[in-house]
Length: 78
View 1 (cartoon, rainbow, N blue to C red):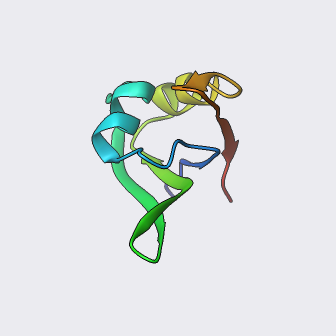
View 2 (spheres, one colour):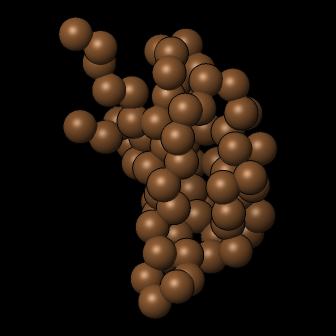
């Protein structure tokens, strides 16, 4: 059984798009990005799916870093 490797991102800048999130996290190992939208605008949250555990763990270490002027939080999603 393959374990789901998904990170929940909170506090993202409202201007954040998939390419800027991939750049911030390092594109390696990312298989899918879902940015949560409300009324056609980014809500500041996203789910990032990983294909390997090493890149997943590396991305989790970016928790509590600044992306632009926003302090972002990353959590293991279950």
